[in-house]
Length: 113
Length: 113
Image: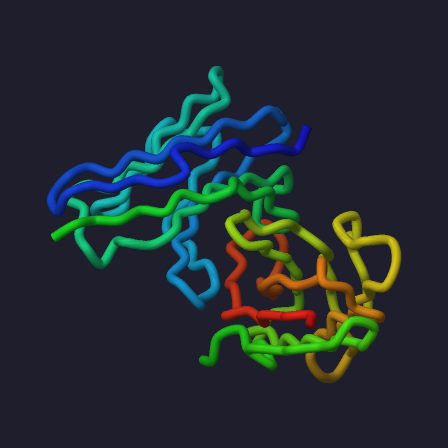
């Protein structure tokens, strides 16, 4: 199966809190797992990506945790800010890069001031 | 260095008309990908092209949809005899080679009336 399941569908956090979005996949051939941020009316922009040879990757306030055995990965946004309010998509690809990405359905994040 | 350019940004077509969506990849990028995003959904892969070649069109509907990426000029996604169900945002992405990040354009929002 090519599906990537994402949860929650929507998330509201207070400024300064931690936002956590989870994704699960079934296809063990996936070997590239990016997260995208999308603002209304804009295209998706790559936030951070991980490959299965590491369990965690951190870039600034954004961290991906990856559990290969459980086939799950998650995005943590530390010290969430109102400017982080957007829709976040997880994705996966079997080809090591951005060819033929399979996207989750998205999480609409709202960070209240 | 300009990003991925898509035009038009918005397109309204009556049922039965043809829609042509154009995508100019980033300078130096020879790989182009088209995705479709339905309301409240993630992006769905449609087709992967290199200059003058279709590499993977497994996500393209069998009828009415076609794509090309000529030696000169932008990539074109063509939808013939549009129906209401074709209303969606269509995103193009490009990358310099395989196995790397793809950069998305801002999309073309097609409305079929």
